[in-house]
Length: 247
Length: 258
Image (cartoon, rainbow over the protein chains, first blue to last red):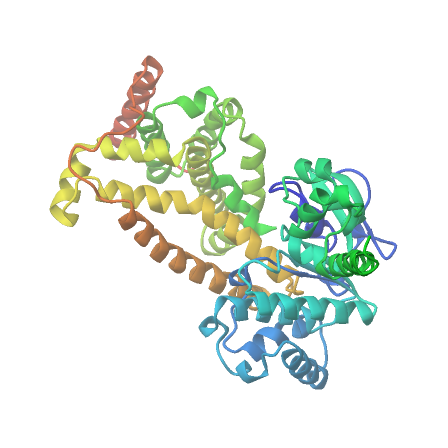
């Protein structure tokens, strides 16, 4: 996370060799990125670009999703199977024979995601995946990311969407002016006034609420609804007990 | 990366002496270089015209990007060289390749050091264009605006092109892989998104313009006014002299290739 121009996308592009370090070293699973081609690195590190219009070109959604698999030299049988599976997973199966250009913005974004997921990269990088998505789609995306995590895949997300991040509570790397300024769990970072200001973000609503409730003995690093609910319930039941005791 | 060639046509927002030249004078300089380079195939002349621009590129601080764009144009220059080598004498092939590099340099120089806004102002000053635009499109500045927009879209499209290339390379597309035919086909996944982005953008642009009251009335004012400085007059004189001289020589003498 970080302000516009902080270097988030630049950093992401280092990971599959689209950009190479001018100074220092970037390694992916121990391999120096300067020694591998973009295609080789992409096989491991899949980047989903922010704007689906930058990559959609095929006649059908099915071809679009299969494009990368062909480039990577998968066998035809595997391609067909992987494409069907990915379309199914992203709820796009009924669009398999539709032109990607006829789909809505949100659906196109999902096709773009499918086009990368199809080859099952070990690391998935999503550049601003929540932009232009309605709440339900975001919710689905979140579940999908968690599912990938449970399969042992790392998901890196470039985003400004503090609420989305707050609900997942992942590790956050905060960038500003080309440098990493902080890293840690989302609840630490997103409840820190100084860091939030520095990266021109806004606190998640829960963090705002709880920083103002500090006087009641609540912790300040609450960012997600779930934890907020538990803390409030605890406090309320305490109050209830005290009222019942008449104190 | 051969699309880096487009980098050489992107305006670089600097404030050097070359950037501050009046766009009209600079454009005439471009014509002053292009006319002789199209009229003659003399290798010394072409090389000279190429070298003359190096100090300008240096003052404009765009040499690095110029070299980049030349490197991107290597494939096309090689193609021009090979085709001409097999259809004519060697000197001719050298001259035509040199001419290509020269034209590329000249346009690259112009677009790298002239802001699209200045260019629009300059075109708007030309009475003939205003007259033509009024006759044709009903508004005196519609035509100059059309041109500015087209020019303005070159750098934007260069940025888009880079993103599209990045996106497709991330999907395992290898542009410089395979034989010539395959290489050409490799560009389909680049060109289709680019084309669609361009169409979509132009539709949005039209709506945005209408929403802001375009084309407005006659006698629209502008925030910045262009003014000729002594150095602009000098450049104007040199360019005009060059053009006239080129035509005069062209019609009176036969200039050999070498």
